[in-house]
Image (tube, rainbow, N blue to C red; front, side):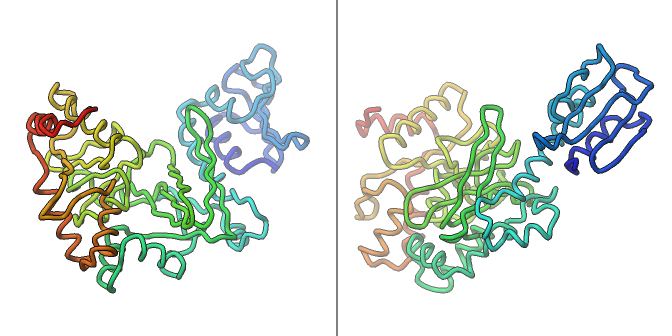
Amino acid sequence: MLREVNRRYFLKAVQGAKIKKDTPYEIQCNCPLCGDKKYRLHLYHNKQKNIDLVHCFNAGCVLDSPMTFKRALPYLNPSLEEAYKKETLMEIISNSYIKEDNPLKSLLQKKKSAVADTGIDFLHFFRDCKKSKRCLEYLKKRLKWQSKDDFSRDFQILGNVYYNGKKEETRFFEHSSEKDKKHYVKDSIIIPIRDKGREVGFYSRALEDRRFSTFLLPDIPKFWKNCPVSEMQIVTESIFDSVSTGFENIGAMLSADTPPEISPPENCIVAFDNDKTGFEKLYKEIENTISGKGKYKRFFIWPYSFRGVVIEEKDFNELLQRLVEIEKMPRKEVLRFIKEMIEYNTEENAIKAFLKLKEKGVKI
């Protein structure tokens, strides 16, 4: 039987051509490419290979040898190609499970697709994090919750958070111009990536090891934020670091740098990790700003100490954990401390920040 998405896009592509035959297994019509009037263009399902093929039986036509519908569509109507790619990807996502006994599989089979134009409906793949005791324990340990206010504050910042259990391995395919990537999500916390109110990807982090993955729908930049870009107050390298800064409007790079599509506002603070790699990135970005090629205006410089507290941790989340767990400071006080440290050690002038690094004897 023809795939429904191939059927729909084939009929769109040959709109205006006369249809002679239209069955669940084949469509036959005039070919708009070669001017055929004898219904020689066919879309049919090849049972042996389990694929849909397009073939025009008019010699000399560009489609005069069988090819997959995906390859034929750019010839029939190139303007439909991008929409077709997105829709087929969504179809793959909605049916991409490894284990037949996955408890969510029966739910998926009742729905035509778990992905709508408004984004991904993650509840068709994962469970609500708040219903998983194990997931909440992980977040409590990672973010050092001490009260219901801490719980409410962080969920207000993070938004919807999901969990995939130990027995619920889920597979996602991500299509890119380079190669298709496979994302295997199991026993992980899942934090959605949003764009214009839609959930269009996710960052997953395993609960028991350091496995992580970032999945994105096509044309979505690799960047997490909980507010419009123009309202961001701080950008760090990871989501948990941003949550640990004490700021409310935050962003996370999820990689070495922000993608070209993301331009933080001038008053947004950019904070790299407190390690050699982080200083290398900072050094490079400051030099770019000095030369007029940079996209940041405010940089956070990690201090050796602040208000008598020695700062040795690699990132803000590690600092939060140490101050709460080892130094026994209340979490709310720690968040205020970290926010004040960031604001106090942020240089608005990139040249001053550069000179300050030099004065500290930082060698890159």
